Amino acid sequence: MIRLATLAALPLLAACASTGYAETPQLAGTEWRFVAIDGQAPASDRARMAFTAERISATAGCNGMGGTWTIEGDRLMGGPYASTMMFCDGLMEQERAIGALLAEKPVLTVAGDRLTLSSDSHKAELVRAD
Image 1 (cartoon, rainbow, N blue to C red):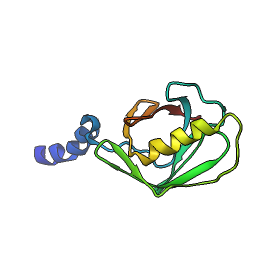
Image 2 (cartoon, rainbow, N blue to C red; image 1 turned 30 degrees about the horizontal axis):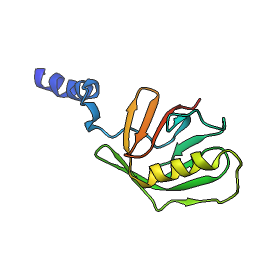
Image 3 (cartoon, rainbow, N blue to C red; image 1 turned 45 degrees about the horizontal axis):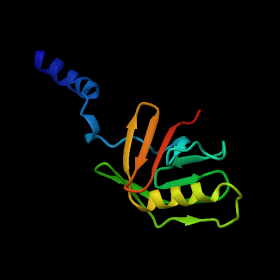
């Protein structure tokens, strides 16, 4: 009887264990709002990033970009990325930064409701969208 109780408790103990970043963050089905792109506030309040099971989409507020994604170690891997190409006054620099950041296979960290993507040349900070 004691063995059965011990075996029954193992999944509960495993669920409480913290293994740090060794676990892949559960991003599928989440949406994030940009709060900083290369240290600057987003030029649009529509700047977002969303993850489905297999695809990522992002916008600085005008053009949309997206592609496939996976996580390998601590890096967000993806692509090829496709993007619409409309002229968006005041948003083009941030759109280029987001596109370059995703292409550079950034380091991804998730801490609570904050997601950070960083590469050698770009950084984005996001919070979970309501």
